[in-house]
Length: 341
Image (cartoon, rainbow, N blue to C red; front, side, top):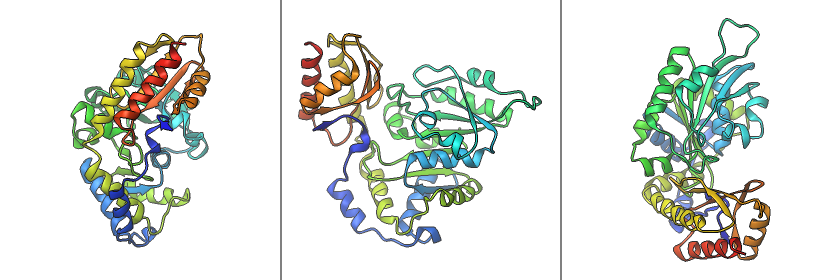
């Protein structure tokens, strides 16, 4: 099967498996795994923060960050397609006891003015205390859209004026940087905390790193333990992340090229009504109402191609390192064949 459901379906390369097999390990709950420690320190320094925390998933790093930044009864500002709201099992509410307020967004991206208008008055005891703003870059439901750093800097300034924390869900932040040419230090500077995923475009099998101040990470480590995220000889997994940083960052732009080829082909398919602009490795398209997403995906499966249903008439396809040119051509041909029936 040609799997375009997500970039999480990638498998470790032979070189990555070798690095995992040879990893130096220790008990990470005691802080004694040298490979985990090296990965945490490397990503923290890369993004200009003091410390890092290796966790099993991006959901956990996001939810730990929310828990440290807030108290029960607080309110988190994001947009209505945000991963922290839609795809993390209600963790913001269940784990941290916070409500969520949505702001208007263009493909997942909002403005400092949008946020400021959503902040609750601090002297209104009947309102939840606004405490945290969450940015997702790239934005998943926005079709892999990239944020404008200048607008993020405006949001940062606004947050500082109002005493709000700012968190980056950077599940695909390396894809964003591969497209916009910004550095990790530039993207790290505006945020109090950042969740950095290694198991998507970078191809590691497991793991995300949360970075922030030393005091923030000290508190985050306690929350990770409470949530069952403390791991023992986790250097085997951290080694995959180290390998990915060494070998898989520069190649991300090829995934973007593949996504744009797919999007260009979809534009010519009769059954496709609209394709969101493609900036990175995610292609989101809407079908004309003569064909439902579930119907298209069922027919594509018969042709050996997998995608994800993103709505009744909406489909997501994600390119990644395990797809070669021949497979992309086959996937494009399958979509064109079914869409023109």
